[in-house]
Image 1: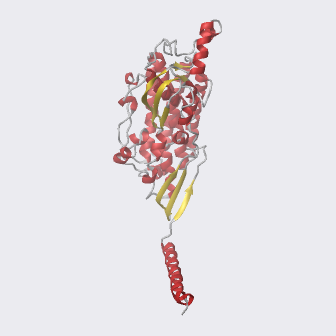
Image 2: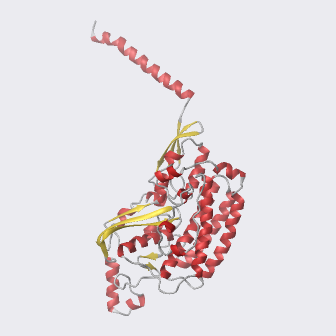
Image 3: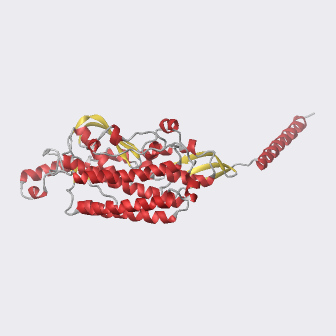
Amino acid sequence: MNKTEYQAPDTAAKAQSVIDEEYQAEAEDILGEKMVLNMGPSHPATHGVLRLVLELDGEIVTKCDPDVGYLHRGDEKIAENMHYNQFVPYTDRLDYLAPLANNVAYACAVEKLMGWELPPRGQAIRVLCCELSRIASHMLGVGVCAMDVGAMTVFLYTFTEREKVYNLCEQLTGARFTTSYTRVGGQIRDLPEGFIGRVEKFLNECELSINEISKLLDRNKLYLNRMLDVGTITPEDAITWGLTGPNLRGSGITRDLRKNTPYLGYEQYDFDIPVGENGDSYDRYLVRMEEMRQSIRIIRQLIATLPDGPVNIADSKNLLPAKEKVLTSMEELIHHFIIATQGIDAPEGEVYFAAENPKGELGFYINSKGGGVPHRMKIRSPSFVNLSILSHLIPSHMVSDVPAILGSLDFVMGECDR
């Protein structure tokens, strides 16, 4: 018997075996088929460009793989080729729903490296900026989350209040969205005339709107059905996955950097830290609602105790001189030229500063070898860390629960991808 004839029966048996295996696999798929669904990339008009690869068994999610990076711009590498003040506009693009808070956190990190401390009025203005940003960010977070689960009316209330904050930002900084207000060592300008009165008017209106939103959602049967016992995060899981901000406090962990490691004089303000009981999507909503009320409380105390004095530090060597002096004095002109071209003269060393931003702990690690630019910079973005729990949190939920969970986490992809 030749070689070909000898192998023929074996080949036929293998072929039949392959057919049997394919048939068996197909039969199993028919009985319990799993489907892969691409949810996203979402449009940037809502939370940001996030793609979720979901494995489904019917309507139940069995596996979730978050795919991030669609907004990656290399901010940390860009910072290594820029003077410290030149990087301020890039911080606007991190959490682009709270640009003023990003500006403040970054400036505080560089000032920690320099060993500087702002005068009282400069600190108070920064607290005002941070708390207005928190209100604006939470307003949009609550409104978009409500819209994701079908409550369209609430979004109109929240967006209106957010626009009022942007009007105040425009009066303060000259820009509504990308503010670039802070500088290392202070702010670009003091509060404009009549600004405090406009802030007080906004606080009164905002408080009424928060109460209206609570009436619309707190006991809304449809909203409760979509949010209660959905996306529950235990305190142990919240700590294990490194959650911060309202997502951590929603799980019952009382941790707020404004209380735990006070900065900018937060220790002199009286406010409460709201925490949840069950750690579900509804608790995270309640935490954000109460945080807005506490921000209003902080701002009112700030207004009542707002000190006079300078808003920038008194360091003539590392700050730009006043413009009128630059135009009339040769020495000031030369000094201006040196600061503008070489940057501030930072010492060698490394620092880490974290601020309690609306989304959580926004941290800046700076490694300096001296001179006007950082040797290395690392941004600890709260949205990136908060989203890491999705692969653990979403499985076992239904597909319809995914928008509610994402909305309750209130992430923004600008800082997640950086």
